[in-house]
Length: 332
Image (cartoon, rainbow, N blue to C red):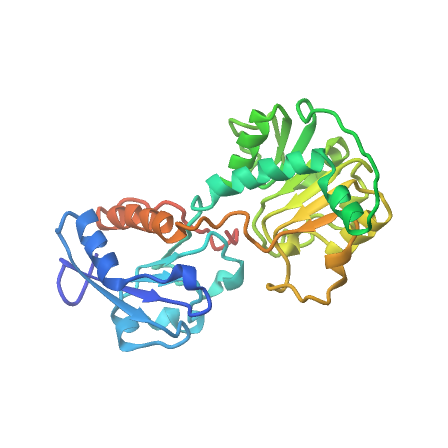
């Protein structure tokens, strides 16, 4: 990596966000792990900025930025910068990526969530199969309403988005014996998916779904990917899980379908805004369970993300392609 201060010098700047306490690092510990990963072949300097919007002298000297929020208007002026690593998997808070100079590679922490998220998806599918959203609604109303079911095996789930989280959700679904239909932009095959379609095929596959699991990234092209028209294609007995971003599903249309009994139930782990306002009517929607964005962030998030970062740091120094590269034109 070119550097004005010598080929063996590497400067990393952490953009810690005070409102995201789980992403805080101890800079000394990160420097020790960074140098160990590089087998002490580089001198590493780790600095910290506690205001992600402030461009400090340390940031101007950095070769690598690590953070969540970025001073996007200033990135092009950081002439030493070669790589930005996001502590999140999602990049929708930084769209559009027109601010990213061609010389700078942007990567994310895709994969850090997948194990826990896959288990959440499995649990949500079983809960929907047992009509737990309806039972929770009936409990609040003091209503004894026996709703019986059949085993989940053999039923069909449509997984919208087959990245790290969607792929793990598909794997867990196959373990439960479900038929898995995947929807992804590339239409590339997946080892845990029976059939793969493109987003334009949603009208074809949604009527087959007993369950829909939404794990796609939020981009301008995917906003309200499941709108009123798409939700109307689902069977009345179908259930929906959204564990990606709220903007992918039209929640007003979803609430109408649930209140009318035109969907069996839904489980959502993402809202907009977050925290979700306590006076929102969505909290009281019939046959809907809301969890507060806990489906995919393990308590050892920082450790898992650090391993992803260190693997890419070794690649950077060895001048090998970085993993988890974000494609600006695609938006993820």
